[in-house]
Every structure is written in C-alpha cells, then in structure tokens.
Image (cartoon, rainbow, N blue to C red; front, side):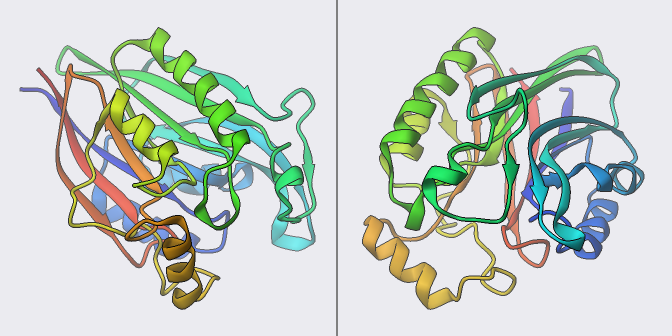
Length: 256
C-alpha cells in the first residue's frame, strides 16, 4: 500500500528556525505543512526538507528587523506537484493587510485566511493534502468571526471531497469550532494528547495557558489538528516538542 510521511507545524515565523530545520532533516518527510512561514525563509526550508515549496501569502509584517516581510503558510513536497491551489476564505488578500504586531481581535481579523492544497503522486497513487492557519480568537474561546469563517472553510472543503487537512486551527479540541470539524472529518490526533502548544518555547507562561483552557472549558489547548476524509488512512500520529512554540505533528498517510 502506497503511503507518505507527513509533517505539520506552526513554526512561529523565524523564531525557531534552527530547531525546525534540524527536525526537518531528521524526519525525511514527503510533505511538510507549515503555518506562520516567512517567505524569505523558503529557500532554507526547501533545502532542509529536500523539496519544492508552494507558498500562500497571508499578510505583510511591518515590524522591525526579523519581523519584516511577507508571512503565510506553505506546503513543501519532495514529490512532484500534480496540482496546487490557494483559496482565500476570510480577511484581506488583495492587497494583503499590513500587520504591525497588534493583537486586537479586530486587527487580527483582517489577516487573510486561506486553504492551501496540493495533490502529489507516489507509487501511482494520488494524495491530496491541505493546510490552513485558521482565524485567531482571544484566550481560545470561540467567536462569531470564527463561526462565520468556519462556514466558508467548510464550503471550500466540500468541493474537494477527499483529502487530509493539517493546520493550526486556533481553537482547542472540545470547543465548538474544533468539534464541528471533527463531526465532518476524522480527528486523527490521539486522545492521549491534550496540548499542542509547547510550553517550553511558547511566549505565554504555562499557568496562563492553563487558565485559558479552564475558561474555555477544555482539558488543554489542543489547537493543532490533523483531519481526514474516509478515503484516507492516517496512522502513526505523534506530537513532538522542542521544534517551535507549537508541537510538530508527524503521521503516515495512505489510501484505502
């Protein structure tokens, strides 16, 4: 049975590049889904992964130094692309919103959100892999903006029929946002994992994150997801710390 090795992780821009590059070299993955990727880092990441990148810009960072540049999400594949596409479902993308590191919800809501999708072929079998960095909300609690954007995202996914979807969903498992996705598609993150934020590298202290989880009524902040439709089998799913402020997800993907 044909299968591919998949990695997905929010890398927090350029803050943990050394850790992430080392991880990529170790994993030898066929496909890598990256959220919070800076366009300037793509050559380095392509070299580490040994593949070609499909990049979707989401906003422009106008901060100083390392914070400057085009920011988005990426899929790197060692396998040739059969197709690649980006479909925006929220925020401003033409032109891109210029972001000044503010975290007010009304400002963050202007950042573009998109579904990035590729199709690759391995051993004569085609695999469709998608990623997104879903709409942010304060403290992990669902918002009306998230509910509206989720409806738009689900509309795009309905057209695609069969796929594997990885990403940072900015909504913890147990919330209505994450659980709505899990009603439509299989949630492949094992139940033993309750957190996908890496407290050792996250800028917010563990006790504050735990308070957010309690306020949201969830056991932990499992905000990163790996979903699939019935045609796909996702196995050997693991979460890895020490890569970024989010855990990296690794998995094997095959088809029935």
